Image 1 (cartoon, rainbow over the protein chains, first blue to last red):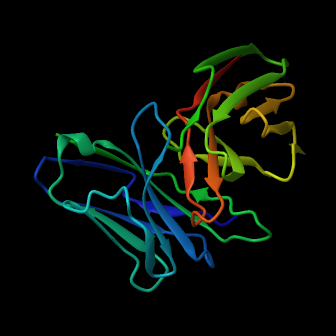
Image 2: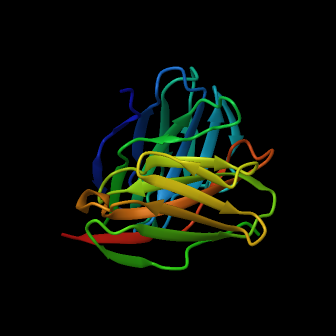
Length: 115
Length: 113
């Protein structure tokens, strides 16, 4: 069964350092999402891509976060500089709408700890 | 604004019982709803979805009920098993919102053998 791949699974970094996460969606899925999930809460959308274009980045802290999906396949989310409050799980998801349904399939996530 | 919330943060049941997890939503424009299961340290796993033109949908051991009048969604799990122990999230999406999902805060289901 096809899955969303993410790496690394865990990342520990010091505040003010740069960090990057990678996501490879399910093959053929045009829509890719990055979420942040704080422990005990539901995922919160950071950015959504349709192919290589950003369609929603309203919740992305653009002063320190950036995301790209240059060829419309895999994607990178970057934080520079990292802050203590960025400690969270970063989840990637992909979807391919069909028949009015657009369930999102999630990867295993990257657990970020900023010290 | 949009919000999706849950009535019960923790639900404890015995193995073999039926479980019901509830969710309230506030955006009347929402037309698509999903339930996800998330085990510790893993990403959310799709369970079942329902569109607003339906009020009930069944899967394997799971049923989702949608009451648009009171903006309420529920997930029923039949014959709950220890492997069902996890946090369950409902999520909603509004028409025309680029399929953006808004998640609730989750309900933890604990199944005792």
